[in-house]
Length: 95
Image (tube, rainbow, N blue to C red; front, side, top):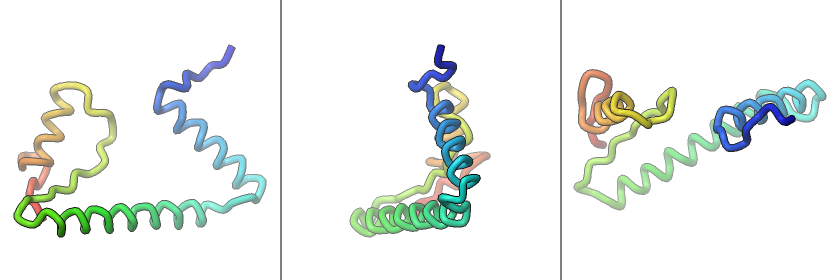
């Protein structure tokens, strides 16, 4: 029986990490290339956010960091609200 449930996000992450490990172990790709691709992806995302912020002038745009877990309960929503509107955990300031 297949031990992984492909509907769960953490199982997909595990599979991707395993494939990346095997590809790097075999010499097909290097971790430097993976890091470079992730940096490029982050730069593209920053560009998109900047374009959005310029197109909606007068409206505050807040960058919310990637949270360690899913937001699915009241404490998670509270943490998200702190980042959006200011509070103990977040700035809440628009750019």
